[in-house]
Image (tube, rainbow, N blue to C red; front, side, top):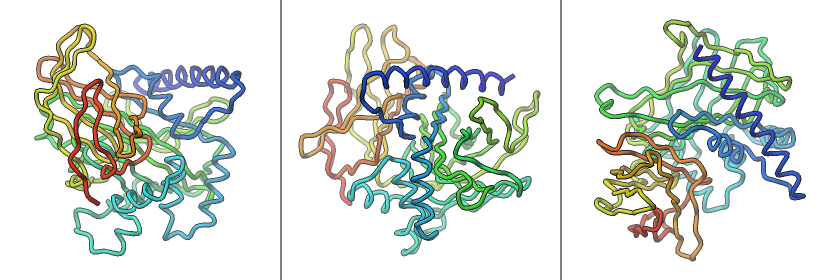
Length: 363
C-alpha cells in the first residue's frame, strides 16, 4: 500500500508538472527546465507536512550534453562536470568553493584526509554495487554523487525516469524530537559508459544535523516514457516494508567548520496573526537552518530567506521550505540555495523583514 501511495502521488505531480510546462511555453519564452528547476517545482507541489521526494527528469538535450562531458573527461576528474551539470553551471568562485568543501574531490585526494573525512566505501548487495563518488555537505544539507552498478543485463536509458527510494538512519540517542527530511535524485548519466551503470546526485535536506548519521538506499524504480513503473532493484514486504538496504555512514563533522552559528536567540518577527521567535540559526554555503517558537494559527509559516552580498546583490533561497516540529517544543525549518554560496562575500542574512549580520567567514 505504501508503494502504491508513493506511485499515486508521483503520478499526480507528473500531471501537474506537464500542465505547468504547457502554460509556460505559451508565453513565447523558453523556460528553464533544468534538473534543478524540476526538483524545485516538484518540491512546491508536495504538501509541506509530508516527506518530499523530488524526481526531476532530464531533457534529451541535457542528457546528451552530460554524456558528452563525461566521455570527454578522464575518470579521475569526473566530479567537476558532474557538479556543473547538477547545479546548472558554476562560476570560478563557486567551483573553488565546491573543490574545497567536497569529500572525495581532487583537492581532497592531494592532501592527507582523516579517516572520518573520507568517502564511505562502496556497498554490494544482491548483485548491485553502489559507490559514492563525491560528497558535498554541511550541517543539514547533503549532496552525494552515486554510481549505481546494476547486475549484467540491466540497461539504463536517459529516456526513462529513475526514482531512488532512500532515507537517513539517525542514531538512537539523537531521536529526541520530530525529525523530517526532503530529498531528491537527479540522474546525470544513464547507460553512457556501460549499459548497467547509472550516475546521479542524491540530495537531502533535513531538520537535524546529518553528521554522524547514515544515508540508506532501499530501492530504485524506473518510469518509462509510456508511464509504466517497474522495480530495478530492492524488495518490499507488505508487512515489514523494505527488505534490502545499502548503507553509507556520513562523516561526523560534515564540514561543520563552514556552518556559521548565528547569535539570534530572542529575535522575532510578526507576520499577520503569527509570531516567530528564533531560538537558534545556522547558515552554510549550502543553505540555512533555524529553530523557532511559533505563536499563531498558521502551523507551517513560510519565510523569505536570502543573503545580501557585499556588492549589494541578493542570493535568495530555493523554493520549498522544510518545516518540522510543534508549537510547544519548537519548530525547525530549513531552506537550501540554488548553488553553493561563498559566505565570505555575504554581509547580512535576511529572515523575513529581520536583518541578521554575518560574521566574516574566511576561506
